Length: 84
Image (cartoon, rainbow, N blue to C red; front, side, top):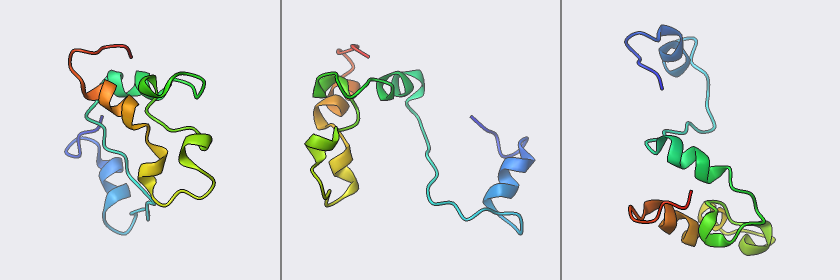
């Protein structure tokens, strides 16, 4: 986590002449649950993984959504299901 009012170096990386051209910036509001869930390996069932395996997404994925395991994200979103 960062606070742009106290982390001046971080803010400089986002704006101004020292800004970096980022390909992506990940904002996480999931905390440890998201990190724990993302660390589940590809040999686990789809409802226990956040990311789809190569076999599940196919050889030529049409979009970024193909990389997501829908059953796994449903498990993470369900407040009554804490398998991660």
